[in-house]
Image (tube, rainbow, N blue to C red):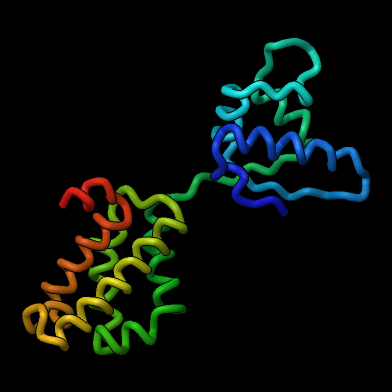
Length: 183
């Protein structure tokens, strides 16, 4: 399994595909390579891959991918509304200790904050959901420590309004870090 190929730079994508091509000539190997089609095509269109294209200096990303991968399975796009349900699911499964300690066991309050603030309209991937939730959890833990040390006002990290503020800051920090850095 070759994962995260589409997260490499365009040059590294071309190098990785070139390396994969060498092993694809062996019948004993089966490669599972999950990737975003458009990202690989764009990388291939920007960079010449001499070893794959023997014809001339022109080539097409579609042609290269078709030549490399004989069997493709296309998955449907993720539905944004599923991201909210996914967030609730992972929180029920993985965040129960956090919710019990920092939300006094109120799953409803946590899901309200997650549903209204953390999982905003631009959240489109499971990785993004985890990043935002992890950022929020870390920020709540830091804020709670500061509240207990009386370095922030009482209730900042333990009352609904303060938790909502931390959630908004967490979204900026996780998804809009350029703006967050300026802020």
